[in-house]
Image (cartoon, rainbow, N blue to C red):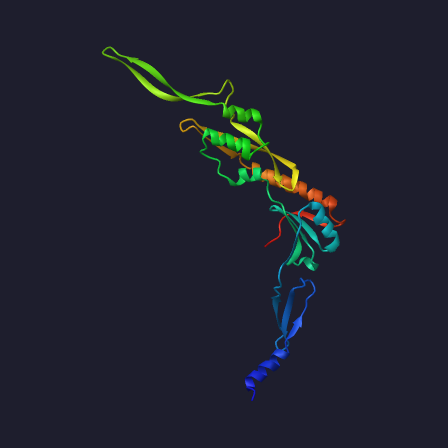
Length: 252
């Protein structure tokens, strides 16, 4: 015996219609109940389709193969993304990571503070290899630190005294310690020709004999935006004719 309520539920469900609506991505559908005319929106959740590329030429060639009239290319947040599904369905697309160079990551991610002289020279010469003027590195490397005693005499009608203080002394061989240096580094590993000139302040603590390297305000942002603008310009030249290119990023 079938339960009467179960049979009625099956009959009711059989009247529900699945609707596809123009203007919606392909994975969106509606369930419509003809009894009350109401429709509810649903999204199918298939496995995400993601094709990853390693050069701009490759992703542009793939865009010509898989793209369509609705495809757009986005450049930003250290990545390139090209939508390939009809109506901008975000489940699928062409993707290319733009990893930052090690030198850019040193400036953007590491805390370069309270470094002793040897460690600071190592950062400039090794971690930022080829990015810093050798003359500036040599100035830091050749600094000599010591201390000296300074005194001032005081005299009165009844007594005399000498106030003495110990102060740090630095010898730089005739060259002043630079207050700032320019770090010339590529922003993205895959695009070594996109070089940014990032101005960084050198903060010296003579009491502790330590150094800090700090990118000046806004320098990293300006460098990243300039690199993305150049990448977008390259995409406009190489992408299929008519494909729109924007500086932006895909939502996750």
